[in-house]
Length: 136
Image (cartoon, rainbow, N blue to C red; front, side):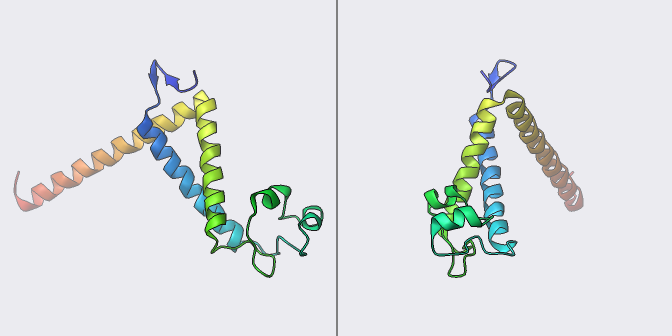
């Protein structure tokens, strides 16, 4: 069982936070693919020709129907492209966490430590506000 850590499974809450992080990574990947690309992904109007000739266009792009603009560049304003990139990143992240116990435990510890640190900072700030207001 890869999701078990010391007899306690990785909580649903930790998976939700991890999927949110993977979704943000998918959005970043979508933007980077669209903005940083110097050369067009598609060089012709024939998809099979592009699979063999172009570096940025693959058979996966053809099968998933990734959208490109008139000049052959990956479309930043395409909801389909955003949905594909984000959902594939989240799906890959889910399978990575579900199948690798060490990664699942590390992400769970990281999330729990981060939340504890944020809670400590919030308590510290509230104590400082109370001191400034003279409430004790």
